[in-house]
Length: 66
Image (cartoon, rainbow, N blue to C red):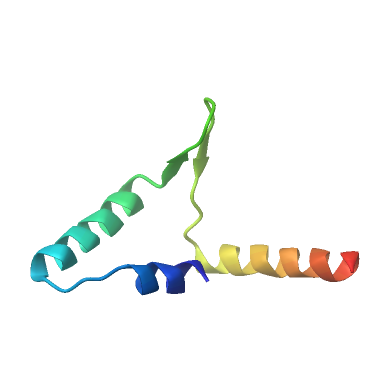
């Protein structure tokens, strides 16, 4: 869902916009921390296997609830 919405909402129609988009992706990969309200910092998980397992755990919990 998140990936498809990124590509759905981003219009890249010039070489400059493509370079800016790639630069933003590279910058986020180098510093994968998300600032949230408060003083805590959270890492962004980029390992596809870990993300897949997190989705599976969430699906199992939802199935157990109802």
